[in-house]
Length: 107
Image (cartoon, rainbow, N blue to C red):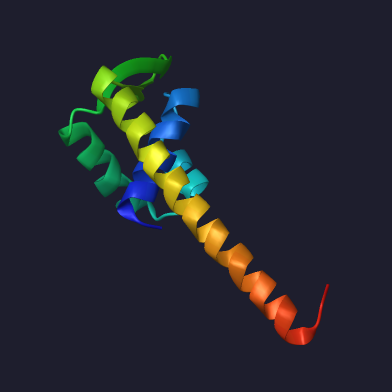
């Protein structure tokens, strides 16, 4: 997973569940907790994500990761780029499949 793909995955996940823990985010994005922490810190440093405290229970504090307006814009831009790249990959793969079908005489 590229850095941009991970950023998109994190930003998309935070839109739906801002109170997700880093452990949950790591599990959902399929990366290690350390890599998730590094990527999330980069998003915070860019000003795309803001961290806020909230109480999950009387005994401990939790965090909410909120997208800033710049983070919302970045998510849309990264998603557009990701989609364009995946569409190019899809078109290439579809053409390759057709070529292979032709080679084996498959209709």
